[in-house]
Length: 308
Image (cartoon, rainbow, N blue to C red; front, top):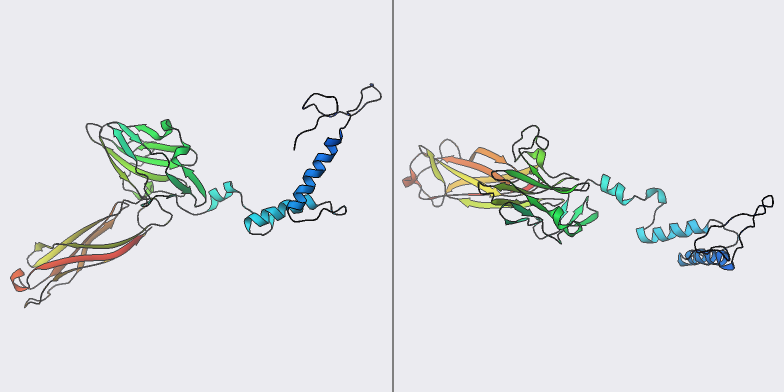
């Protein structure tokens, strides 16, 4: 709807009241200034499925609410939530919308880190963001030699490259793998960057999904640990943005064929286990009463799952 200024006035001129004491004339109201707002409001009411009524002076509000209900599925206006509110309240981790949940950050050359364009991700599960929303300068970072960095994103500052040796970023001098650096709802850990003496970067792109899941299955060749005890060590790569909050695995070290030897001292004992956002480490051991000649060749396997 176009603004209709007083008749004979310049475009955009305001309406004024007449004043007999000063002799000032009031504005002349053109017909369009009265007709057009009525037409506009009547159209809004009809578009919402209502019939304009001379006795109901709340139809504009009802029409707006009806259109919102049609778009949102209904419910009173008191149940509506603004996008800004949703982005502050929904307890959902960032999710990069690629096949593996990673952004594929690269290093075009020594001393440079580049966030690719046209990668979509979701903030708080509701607000879409694209790396193309950021200028090239805001996606390009310089590094120094022999450093460890975290590439991060948050909705206020955008992308930032953080030096683990920076006291402002890491005042408690935490280990790089510490869970305190994990992605949170509003602060996404995108990648780890480690540079060597020539400032050449090794980049570990990390999976960011609202829900991280992994099925674990691996085999290993056991090694003699002590006497007749044989140990198997497993390392399962994750490269997640968050440390698993649940890990359940079962491992075994066993003989592939029947033999005269028997287990003595313990079977499939877990002797070491740890996990970070990068990997699950697990070691198990079985004791026998004799040397390998008594039970043939050995194998080991592990299976289970992890979630964050």
